[in-house]
Length: 199
Image 1 (cartoon, one colour):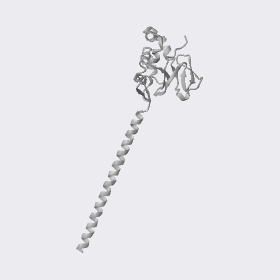
Image 2 (cartoon, rainbow, N blue to C red; image 1 turned 180 degrees about the vertical axis):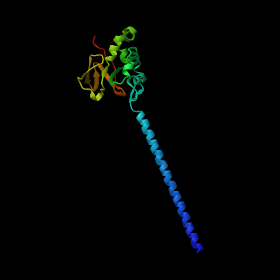
Image 3 (spheres, rainbow, N blue to C red; image 1 turned 90 degrees about the vertical axis):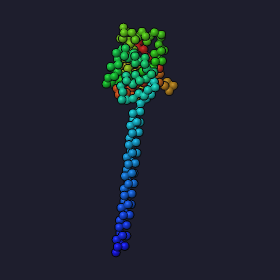
Image 4 (cartoon, one colour; image 1 turned 120 degrees about the vertical axis):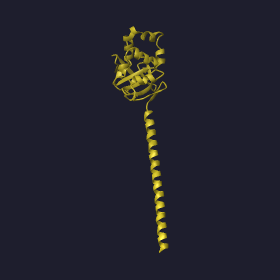
């Protein structure tokens, strides 16, 4: 009888030990799953914050407005300075939506010598504003919305015309080099020339 009691006690102890081990494994597996899930969520968050288009060495992200994104691009310092000089920064930071065709610094350099310096003078503010608003269209036009021969009215009042040649999009005579830099108040397309309205 005493021997049977000892055998039962040993069996119960063994069962308790096996149960404890299984519980520990289950908890460990759960912890591992939670850790993996947390890592996956962290990775997804990182990926989401990295969405955007690279322009002038900076990522243009949809969480910033057009002016904030442009200010990050080392290729658009002249444009940003011009926008501020013309008093358009607040407008282009507004709700929109706007479609902006953004000339690079090199595009401004192609203009006749002294043109930019002249336009940046306080007394030329109206003329500068006219040039800059000729690069802006009300609405949200992405590359997929463009059509060969399409004409759009600019904020300045005159129209710009799109053409598709040799696998490249052009607005007037300027080539569109980067498309669809999305901001929270519109979209920007980088161009290699400055669009000049008719006088």
